[in-house]
Length: 559
Image (tube, rainbow, N blue to C red; front, side):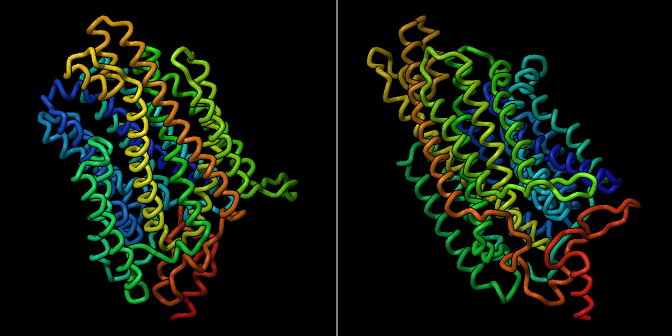
């Protein structure tokens, strides 16, 4: 491996670390909520806003962050975002009131809004088409590793240190990521036009924030809540107006997003299927930790340890998928077999996930850890096959000059999809759980606590020393979990069918639908660099229009 190749792959490690620290922060917060309620005298509303403040700012800032990265430089914006995230993590750790923590969480969301899309945006710029599947697998793997590792790390920290340590642990990881990004990552930027789509930024931010808030509130208070319905409808209306505005402004000024990307089947279905992956996997990430803790009786550390089985399967799937997607040659000889396209990989991955989730839906209250670990390994295998391949197809439709805004659009759609998953599947689980409860013999307050969650039900049963109530609560939760996993299995199966019908066989390479119109601005919009030469200088290697020698010829032609 040459020096430039080594630098490139070490830079990818820095990108993965940036994504991992964001994922860890998301998972450790849920563990810290009971301690935060006691230490900061936080109300239930405060606890909800610890999470909501982050999610709302993240949703509102995603699309503007993508455009800003294209204009000012993706490396520069990633560095600023990491500094912001590290400083906000420290502010969270040393917060003394609920208001301070909510404000710090909002700043964390702002940093994450740039980290997520920039981490994806640099992949088409830094890596060739053949290398991209491996690079995507590394970044996607780092995203999902945070889910089981977070409870492990957070549980250990809460058991041995004060609650602020779960936020402060982000700081050294951020420092390491900063050093690696500064030393190893090349700078790249896209179109630097003078126009800024201010109305588009305002409309997209307001619409995504309103829709996200409505979905969060619906998940907490029910789909009949008037405020939840009103904010969801308002957000949808604003986003519809945003799309109309972007369609009108295209061709007149540089829009915030490229609607023509949706003419590409690769972008449309690659993005949709990565969203469906997150939606289907929510059943595991949300329900199974509660199953391990409240039904089987493990602590947070034990639950996280068993959740690592998902990572085992995911790593196996990613290694298999990237090997099948990459045609390698030895000693300069042609590869023995052509690389496998995305369509069969994504289809098989979703089918494996569907089968695994269906097995999980057969769980009973008497089932042991072995069943859960087994089907989670299989689900992780399907995830590892489907997610990187689908993401590679979506990224293949992005032009180098707008990879930041394109990646932000992919991230925004996935974020909305994940929020919908939390609200819809959480409601399915809770409704099925409550349908199995018979609490007429309990006082009203205790019955409400049992209905609120399985953790509340287990606490009431133990306080009352009622073995019958404990069995009822656990049986009801397993029933709700089974129904939700069955819904997830149906989603995964439907996604397999959609992938088989609509997904292109192979990822596109800088298609015309994704590139800016030809002209001086388009020529100048090409990336500064896709890899580093051995002497540390920059050289573009991205394939397609606007890169390499074609880029230089285009500039010469317009002089």
